[in-house]
Image (cartoon, rainbow, N blue to C red; front, side, top):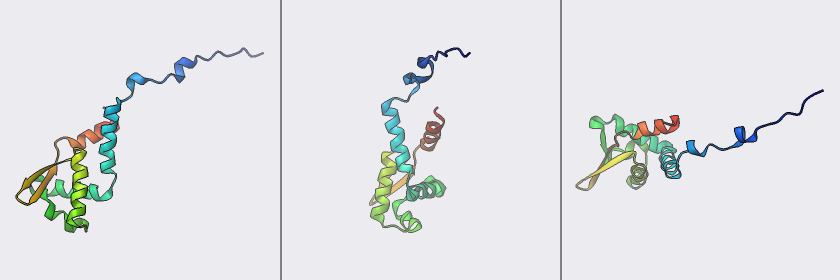
Length: 113
């Protein structure tokens, strides 16, 4: 003889909304990872971080990735909009550097910090 089992469905089936990311934070993180989701943008970040002084002119980023200045500018705008790089205009050239803590923020988002 087996006894009927009572299952407390509220214990295992209730979503834990309190521990979920707020919508705005989830959207910010998704925007960040969308910007990181392209191999060219990853290479551009790598080029900038390894450049002398930690910054690179847009003119120095085109040849290594084999793309036109316009296409690289588009990628850099997406990285800038995601908060991964900062941009400084010097005359006709734009210089980019990694934003302080931007890559740390990406790692923290993955760890749920």
